[in-house]
Length: 219
Image (cartoon, rainbow, N blue to C red; front, side, top):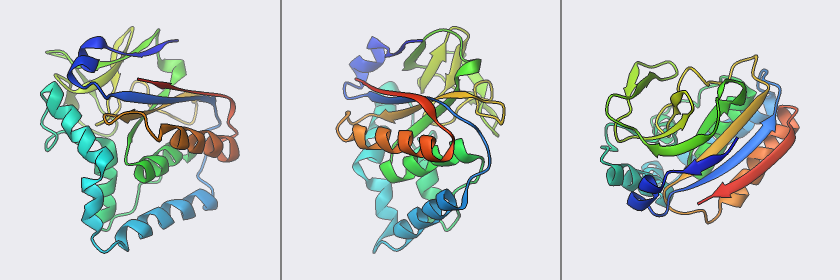
């Protein structure tokens, strides 16, 4: 399986970059140590002199600009990292789903980068990061059908299956998932991406029985 960025998207958003971690994992309940790390991340944000300032962090602003460059309104279609941060700032806790999803959300909140998380057993062929086309849609996880036109999306041989805004039910991680791709999405370049890839890999290995782990940066 090859993961790439479509040249047309790259032309409109030249600093678009992806950080990819692929791993065999065991999907189970989230241990106390990771739950505590999630709570600590929430507390650090809420204890800032101006918590809402996290919504203007460089990575969040770059994502908004990336959406605009493709023709999508970032006020209507937010990146998932911004959505998680808004949830925390409003006083709500991060969702607890399973260990693999929770690790991805923890890294997303800390990095301010949206992360696409995919069950590779449900992905067909190569994955391309591109702009959505007219008429394309899918059912987002726990959401309505998402209008993908002009939205940055991930697409395989069967069509779109993920986006920085909301991933699809087709390739979502479930208790039966055994191999995943976690993809960090940056519209501001790849600088600093190594740190977050290492964090993802180490957390998968420690808490999700991660093995056969590989990582790469695509820009």
